[in-house]
Length: 237
Image (cartoon, rainbow, N blue to C red; front, side, top):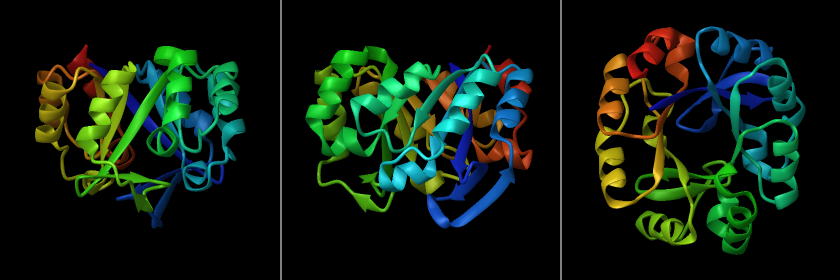
């Protein structure tokens, strides 16, 4: 199982939200590239980055920051937030990003998702953010009409490989991850799931590893000190 420490970006700074609420934002660091370098020094090989501003309006205001992270580290970077065109995907890949995450556009624009998977293959992952069982879109401000189960089934039929699945109710709460959700999804759908939201302790990491899950994202727990990245990496490796 791979572990991906997370950097959420807003205004060029490292921030964290609570349950996706932009009104509950905490700034943790002013230099995201330095934060990424620290994660690499601790042994991380992957980084999960999200442009929170882009997620709301479909732009890429933090693109220069992500490009700088790619320049200053050897991390494999996956990026989400505001990626709603093939040109934007190409721009990120050209900047050194290893994998892009398609969120809102993957749900609302099926043709775009098909084109992205056809053109970029495994470099195009899909982000599915669940809020009370429904798929949240546009920066978690709206929910999609399509049922989550139907969307996962559709992804399998389209040849999607990697899915970052976030339980919004757990995100930033430091209350533990939703192991039952990921157990159910991994049994029902042949996709590489990355768990996101609420991974707080070594026991969470162990539980997800036991499921045979592809990956897990580590967020707020790293910034508060509740979880040590080096210890978590040793647990999975």
